Image (tube, rainbow, N blue to C red; front, side, top):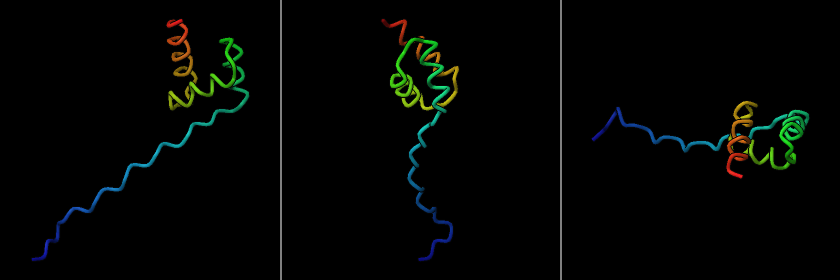
Length: 66
């Protein structure tokens, strides 16, 4: 029995590439919000985007929890 329209197995989803922001921008965000550069880098990694507004929203949410 020959099946011509057989579906091929889907490829495994690839892991998203890590977001890399310029050190100057990370340092600027850290200085503006009085955080360490390491904390800002961790927030960028957790958020998964290099968009400055998204990073700053996440920082504000974290500060509201304190």
